[in-house]
Amino acid sequence: MADQKATDIYAQHRALYASAPKPAHVPNELVVDYDYLHPAGMGNGEDVYTALSRLQSGPDIVWTPRNGGHWIVTRAEDIKFIQETYQVFSHETFTIPRGATPVIMPPLTVDPPNHARYRALINPSFTPSRVREMRDKAEVLTREIIERLKPRGACEFVNDFGRVMPVTMFLGIVDLPVAEREKFVEWGLTWMTSTDSEKKLTALANVKAYLTNVLDQRAVEPGNDLLSRIVGWRDNPRFRSEDETIGMALLIFFGGLDTVANMLAFIVRHLATNEAHRRRLIDEPEIIPQATEEFLRRFGLSSTGRLILSDLDYKDARFRKDDMVLVPIGLSGLDDRLYDRPFEIDFDRNPTHNTFGNGPHKCVGAPLARVEIYVFLQEWLKAIPHFRLDPDRPAVSHAGSVNGMNSLHLRWDV
Image (cartoon, rainbow, N blue to C red; front, side, top):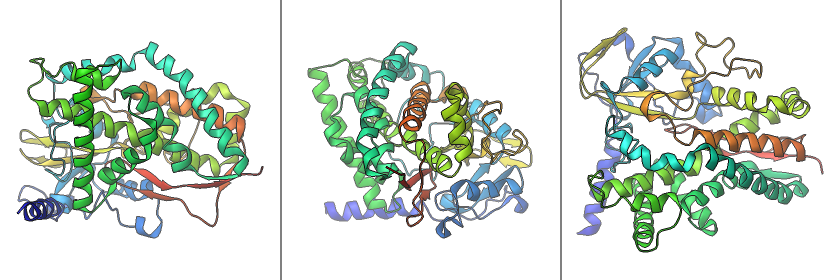
């Protein structure tokens, strides 16, 4: 009986990803065939950002039948508008297809004014003083990893560094065992990138069970970590249910496992093929902070959904209540109306960007992400200034709710 119930749940989850018929309110001229989870062309080795940017060759706002049917905004001004107009574009349903994430994850899934109560729990972990402390730890950890890798003359960057340094830093914030890092990463990757509903939901269940146990332990023996702070509010009337407690823990868990790792991989792929940029960062280390912002602009990662709460005619789109709209941050940084030659990395460019979002749901971990990128560039380029892609093992990237790299093989002379 239990097996049949699970089979039914997996089937229902798979059905969410089916294509939907075009609603009557969607103009024919705005319809495109675009699957943000599997963009056409990427199967032939095309870069995820090249695939994504093709959307900007048409109308500013389009609609696709894929993944249950949804709108897509393709321009920076519209991305910013939707991020800030939470009264119409709600974050309470943030995954496309709708219903694919069967848990709530405050504060991501809560709109103002209630959003602030959950954000207040997380903010103390990312104050300027805490981030300064973490920078020192990041520098030591980065040097240790590089010292192990350098004599090898090669590495698979994603697993040998990208999912080591930032993930280890995150595990320190939540006081989870570094020895279990690989298991945590596997769970996170399966949940974020798998196309198999059974594997995806099983990974989510594994994480949920693990974190529930940890929260129970921290309730008895609290520490000075973020999960202990969350569980300390378990009985606070500001929390509406136990689901919100575990949901916050899930959000923090998944958010800490892949974002910086993927950003570092895209940065390294660029530097491996651009000696002039490597040389400039080595010769002018004072521009690393500005270069960090330019990399963040160029490689925006996330694509999240919004649930439309009320009818709104905006530009040529007729948004209707209960429609979903996809907000691909990566397109904001590639908008040629905002940036000249947006695909080019230019360290002298005004580094303003939207990669960490706007409005109430702006990424709370942005200060730490910047520090980790800065520390990586500073330490890696001092130790391994000349590196290249392995021509026999091409880099593999993926699209989805978070764009990323599956593998990135590097070589250097020893």
